[in-house]
Length: 387
Image 1 (cartoon, rainbow, N blue to C red):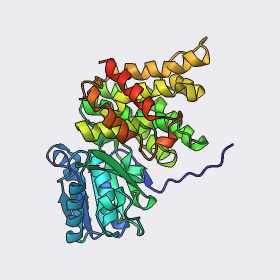
Image 2 (tube, helix red, strand yellow; image 1 turned 90 degrees about the horizontal axis):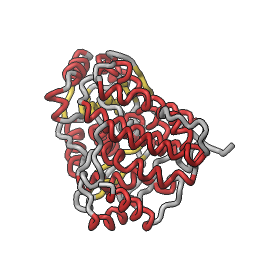
Image 3 (cartoon, rainbow, N blue to C red; image 1 turned 90 degrees about the vertical axis):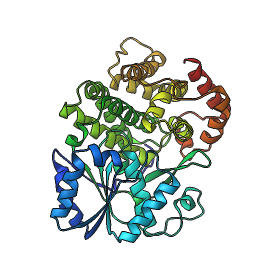
């Protein structure tokens, strides 16, 4: 057995109605002033937003609502939010929403105790030396798993790159998983975030750094997605399916924050920065193409993925059984209405830029098959040719 380590630094509470207890949880962290991070859509449309706000006020906390968070938050967005939290003097932050508010909040909490701009940490001009301010994350989507990960992704609009900053001290102190908060997710968002979770689980499971604990979490996450994603898309009021998808997302994220991701995320970050494609969509678009490339490196694991996704591999040799996993994911993309690579905006002329920005992805060594620039070109050209 390989040597490995595993850390899970975030406390997780799961249950229907748990979001109503956020005020109590803030006080446990010693909070008096809370910086409540979300986006304008959540303020206007989420039934959870006022419930959580009232919970904190009932606990006697002073709360500043900060909703100026855009998808794929930029350096400018992070710095503006960071200054707002400093000016308010908050001692705890609460993030409600998907990956963008949670990632932004992680960076903001880190910048309360570490000098400089988020760009300094993105480009390694500074290192994180002090623990971030305490953060509570409350996801309203089942996909990013940002509530239990160590990293936060920020967009550099000038270079058209999405770059992560990762440090254990940035992990949320508490993740509150309330399946009731997922019931209002529209089908398209349910699909893209669910496939994001599947991508995390598959890349974590096949990572070169994987180990028995991460394998167990990722494989169970894959099973849960296989059994519940289409149900959640078809019937958003299915609370059991919603809860299972939330768990799938969390487990995959807890695993990959220990063992890394791979070439799918390398490309997806570029697509997101260049074409403003939602992260889950970008991952879903690239996942079957990168899987097809990776199968020869670890066919037994891809065979297990196929089985976990409900594929019948009886009587098939290892190679054919492994490629069944690719077929299963392609069918998921069709069932969930995921667009093609051409539809998200990629052109043949842009492929060299995507390759250049993807090959340097910090987690690329975790990809199960060694990837060269020529390999990325072939993957992208092949995917683009399919429409």
